[in-house]
Amino acid sequence: AQKITQTQPGMFVQEKEAVTLDCTYDTSDPSYGLFWYKQPSSGEMIFLIYQGSYDQQNATEGRYSLNFQKARKSANLVISASQLGDSAMYFCAMRDAGGTSYGKLTFGQGTILTVHP
Amino acid sequence: DTEVTQTPKHLVMGMTNKKSLKCEQHMGHRAMYWYKQKAKKPPELMFVYSYEKLSINESVPSRFSPECPNSSLLNLHLHALQPEDSALYLCASSQDRIAAPYEQYFGPGTRLTVT
Image 1 (cartoon, each protein chain N blue to C red):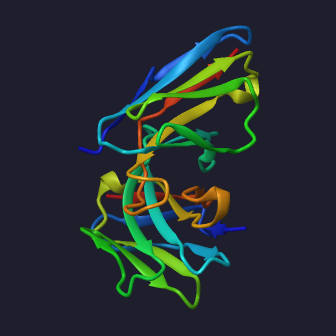
Image 2: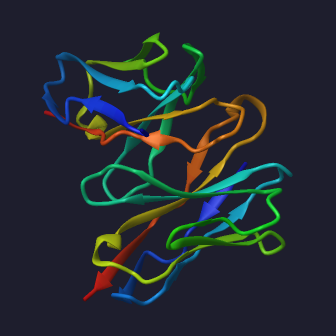
C-alpha cells in the first residue's frame, strides 16, 4: 500500500522569502508519480507541480520546484519569493500505478502555510 | 483552459431528500473522479470513471450513486444521507486514467450539509 507523510501541520514564512514543505512517501511500485496541490480557503484544489519516478531532473513550474530525492523517498516542495496569496493548505499526493487502483491519488495530511507581510 | 465546473456551490438537504451534484469539463478528458473531503483533512477518493465506465468504487455506501451520462458530465446522486456525510465534494478530471499526462484538475467543490 502507498503512503504519503507530511510532518509539518503548519509553516510560517515571511513575504519574499523561500519556504520548503516536506513530503515523504512509501511505495513498492517502481513506477509512480508525485504531485503537489494548493487548496486556498475557498476549497478548490489547484495543481502545482508533478514529478515522475523516472524523471531525471527535478520538476519546476515558475516559483515552484520539487526537490526529488528518490533514495530518501522524499519530494519536498520549494516555493521561492513567497507571496501573501500563497497562504493556503498544501497537499502532497502520490499516484497509484498498479492493479485495479491505477490512477488513484493518495494524499498526505497537508501543511497549512501562512505568509506574513 | 483547465476548468472543471461544479453545481451547486452549496447544498443543504434533509436525511430523506434526494439531490444530485453535477460536474462538467470541456477539456476532452476521459477520466473523471469524485472525492469527499472533511474539514482540515485530505480528499478521499470515492469513484473513478474512465471512458464513461465506472473503474473504481472505493466501497462507497449505496446512498451515493454516481453517473457519467457522457464524457463531459459526471453526476453524483444522493439519497437518504446521514449527517456525517456533510463535507466538501470535489470533482476532478484528467486526460486519461492510465496514460500521461497524469495531473488531475479539480472543480471548486460543492459544500454539502445534511440536516
